[in-house]
Length: 143
Image (cartoon, rainbow, N blue to C red; front, side, top):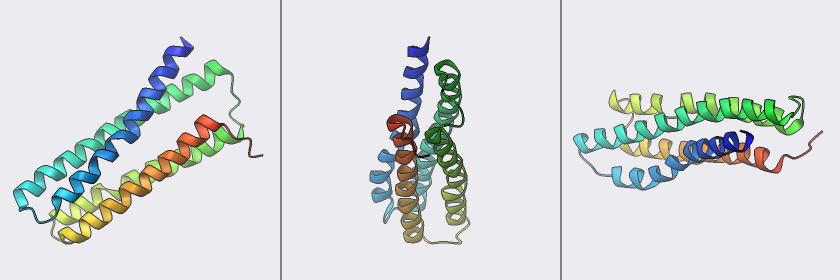
């Protein structure tokens, strides 16, 4: 059973980060498009974020099961740091994408500003997830 939970955990980790790499070409295609095409691109963008969010739910549940089955203490430094980065990524995900898309649709920001903000946010979120992935794989002893 432990091996199956690890498999689910790895698949959910892939689904938590993978869709963001597809968004870079999408952001490049958004430049100079009409409103109708932009709305469809933004719908794809939001769908990718939903996939990431739900994969994150599976990632957390499978991680808890792995902690329980693997007898890892919750006080281990890499576990604590993974949880800190995970909470940071949840807060970041909630603030980085949907509010900017909503501002664009309300015409509070222009397309170039939206693309710039989304591009930066995608890279920052990938960086957060890679840090979390490093903690889970390397399991460093920090204290």
